[in-house]
Figure 1 (cartoon, rainbow, N blue to C red):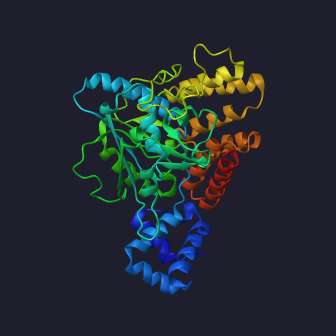
Figure 2 (cartoon, rainbow, N blue to C red):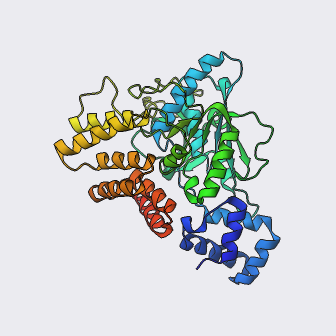
Figure 3 (cartoon, helix red, strand yellow):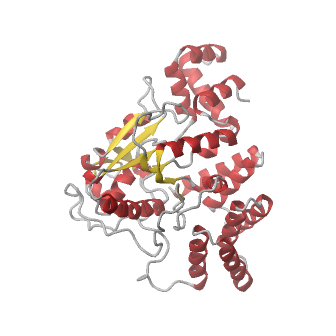
Amino acid sequence: MTDPRVARLLKERIGLDAESIGEVVIGRAVRQRSAKVAGGDVERYWACLQASAEEVQALIEAVIVPETWFFRYPESFAALAQLAGRRVLELAGSRPLRLLSLPCSSGEEPYSMVMALLDAGLAPSTFEVDALDVSRSVLERAALERAALGRYGRNSFRGTDLGFRDRYFAGAEGEQQLCEAVRAKVQFRVGNLLSPTLLAGEAPYDYVFCRNLLIYFDRPTQERVVDVLRRLAREDGVLFIGPAEASLLSRQGLRPLGVAQSFAFPLDGEAAPVRPSLAPPAPRPAPVPPPRASTPNVPAPRPRYPKPEAPPVEPAAARLAEIARLADSGQAAEARGLCEALLAEQGPNAEAFYWLGLLSDAQGQGAQAQGYYRKALYLQPDHQECLLHLAALLAAQGDLEGARRLQERAARGVKRNA
């Protein structure tokens, strides 16, 4: 069982809901750190935590194991590229775009933001990226320090579209070194999202990425964090969040951008929709000569929905793409009707059940949403987004143990696909 003193400490310092992440994870981290600095004596270790801010930070880093890779949720970066390209034209050089990634972990997300914008044709002078994380330690090399070095192993490169690696990295298969042109665009900082002075005095950001963090907080802390994100962003800014967190922003009155799986929420509710049929602009030459000149350039990460020139898709896939478009543009009734028609005509379909779950969830119909999510998982047990959305729903209903089990299933699926 987790020491309640440690649980309270984590809640006070970083707003972590101990039950959401699991007693096993926290207990393992405490045992590891206690063995290292206190010979395994729990009371001595607690005294150490009371006396050493560095050890508290080391414990936080041991508890929060970052799981990330380059261009995770590629639709988010495709949407970012189009939004940023449009806004740069509107600004006409009056100021650079400002982007924020938090928590930035080991740097894959903010560096992906930079690569997406460079591939979209934006000049380096037209944007700047800040990356923030709570991670800091004098005892071990911190995640922020690793990110600043720009060296990554194979686990950071997943999926089939790895053209960015040829354009921006050099090195052997085991370790890749990010080019200086990308590294120079990211400023890494240490900061606590719950600190009232976080980035005080800084200009607000056009685009803020805060993904897969809210799921670890209880409801009051989630709402507090969303308030902080609103403060950090411009009034016409856009928040990018994780798939299991979309329902929280919807409940606060925000409407998603009209791009399936981008998990982007304009704060003013009036951002012109990004056309889902458009691929990101063709990548321009990298700012430095690519280290693998013999390898042809591969298009930048792009949405999974079909492009106009793509071969005809199967009827079910075409309908699901239309369902996603309708749902993300706020046409819930129309999206629901298409889902029900698809199921009636073609039988059980995991994606159709998943979308019905999302639509029900967004409308506050928790019991109905849970039923649809479970039907989707019966047909496709490793459906990542469905697992995370159902976990968030169960956590909101107070079933923290059930939510934890679903999160663990989702994490195992990610590792199997790595």
